[in-house]
Image 1 (cartoon, one colour):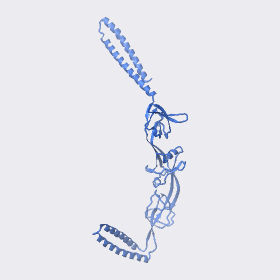
Image 2: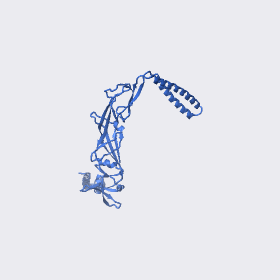
Image 3: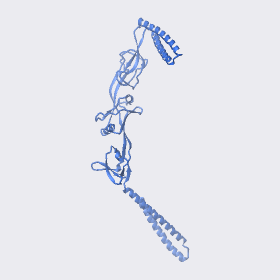
Image 4: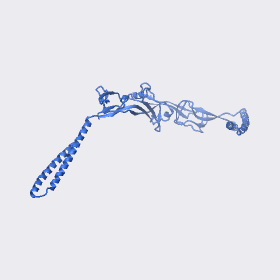
Length: 385
């Protein structure tokens, strides 16, 4: 039983009660007149009863009006004004990795490591310097030592002349003075290097830069500064590993991303790779035919942010988002579907008439659909709920 029925029963019971009180008052008043008593209480009761009846009548009128309004709301569909907006749809995919190669690197020279330029997990290119070693040569010849000594003496004289010129320029030309001072500083550095070479003894060391043989991620890097390396050592100093990163897209979802990437579409697709710290690394989304396997760019940021599990898989995500521009949300309650599955809405034209219009949703959700139709901007439609 609803609230309206309860209120009606209350009104009926109240009216019956008041009628009973009026009857009792009337006969009681008649008897009191016969006995000579004053009818004050009966009159008061009659006034209260009349007032209560007036209140109930007013309440019944209000209740009736409310019932009419609610019935009208149920029977008459509401009118909805359509306006375009931006809408973003985001989908996450599991990133996968495939190892292309794993190349171990061993030393072929004998010497001492003086610098290590590569780092574990770094992507290096083909020919990039990995580390440097110093290799000792055989006894330095007397002829080579005499040449260095002669060069040293000549350079000292050149520096003296350059310093004298620099002092004269200091009083005349500031720009020329600065250039001359830079020249003197460079000559002093060359003199220092010659002096170290002459006083280094009868043996010399040559520095070699060891370069990467191919592109790859540096793995298991064990070489350190100060290590003495032996030629043809069997131990691996590091490995260069090549990876391909990809993800799978279900066939049902492939068309929406391709449609978003087409040049004649106003929508925008944003693709990103989730790094080890949760950061978004943008990459260019490329589809090859109708393949469900999508490979992403092998950039340094992507390959250096692979988060590996113990089984060799990675724990990264691919995030794709499409921004629908100037689309209209239409509630499902305003859409009618015929036997063939075609959908339409009821448009209220400027004359107040209802006109059926077909729609072609670009995306469907549980409670509404998205429609890309500029003719619906600012249009009123019937909403059945």
